[in-house]
Amino acid sequence: MLPLLLAVSPAFAWGNLPEFLPQGRYIDEDAAASHMKAPPGGRAQMRQAINAAIQKNPRNATALAHRAYFFLESGDLARAKRDFDAAMAAAEPGSGFERNVLWSRGWAEYDLGDYAAALADWQRTVALHGGKPFWAAYSFALLYWTAGQQDTALAWYDAAVLSNPQWGNENGFIARTKYWAPPQRGQMRALFDAWKGTSRKGSQAS
Image (cartoon, rainbow, N blue to C red):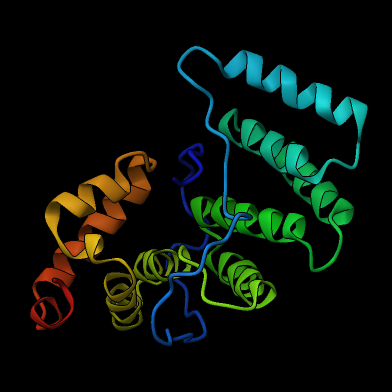
């Protein structure tokens, strides 16, 4: 499940990102790729709990990263950046906490249209993981597609289907993107439709 962020007009909507291509299947677990979603009617309570956790420990990297999302949702980008910076400073280098902050900040950067920054943060997250985390293939596919680099996006979508065949069929696609933010889901739908129109469908989906 992806972080649900405020829809913001991309500042860098069409970029020339360095080409970064997939290698094999991306199926490794990654506990750092997680985001707490408030239950219906529970946003205020969750925000209070996060604020309390930061009051108790101002260097709680996970809580700081989550609070950054609340600021993004309210349009307070300055405070969101402040909390992400504080979370990065608090996270032990190379730790799961650092990976969580980088992964989370990458999604924030994607939603804000800073695709180069999102690519850098996600590449760093993968490097720190040391394997092939499950989220990488579909995330890079979405990133490159939104940045307008269709061939690279399709290569990553191939890797997503190879890693999880759900990405290769309609029902699976709907299930995988059910809780995504609408702009993210719309971009991924366009990529999925383009992928279905290529010869890749017959060779990858099963």
